[in-house]
Length: 363
Image (cartoon, rainbow, N blue to C red; front, side, top):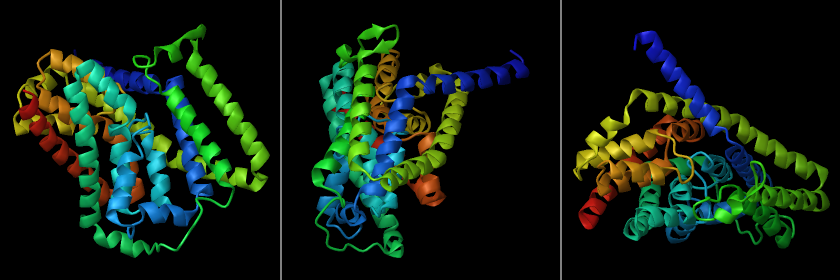
């Protein structure tokens, strides 16, 4: 293969990666996440966010809420970004915000159960424990390293009683509908095969349920919200979309190029034992590569079948879903390059250590 063919192959892989990324389900999931994030930015009481995620909130409250709030979200490292940007914009401390950023993709229930079903319950259980533990460690580290950052932002924590200015039941229903839409459209066919039942051609049961929930959302918004509130919600959602989506596409393209340049056999070659170097390689590769929701599990299963050690597999399970080139590019826009690279380093280091520990425990 000459150099021109080699370059054309890379571009072809990049293009196919982008095309595969822009599946109907992923687009619907991203749009829902952006709408949900826009709702947080425009409708949630800023003081309420600061109360539970702010830098002055007791750590046992802010980090507990941050670590477990992503448990039910079946989202990847990209889908979590608009939600992260939104709570950070509304005053969340850098520590709790980055804890949420890591925990969202790493500890969602679908990923944990799918890991257990495909890789074994010992790996699935350890993944859940390590993910929660690492998310808090990363947040605490970010909060300590950049302890002056939140002070300079000058977000205070005034007293607040309500999550928003509208009735509680309206706020709960508004977000519950979007949350349900996100869960339905990202439901794994492995764990919830019924939702992937074909109705007409490629139109699945999950698509019908998504539309029904969307209709309920549209009707409730029309009835409960004033026109200016709807415009503000959509404006905030679109603002986040303009910032995040181009970076996602760029990042996915770069990830595709990496897949074309680095043959899988070399990845397996360097992660066949449980040394710290093998775990570091797995963590670093996982931090750069993009894994759509749950796709890391069958990929890692295939690598383990080819000889990948359980330690590097755990490191990849932790770093892969929680970080990617799109994530790095986007959080650098939100937090700045220094903080984004620090976050990257912390994910790689803690994933490496947890992978090494898992390898010793499970070998």
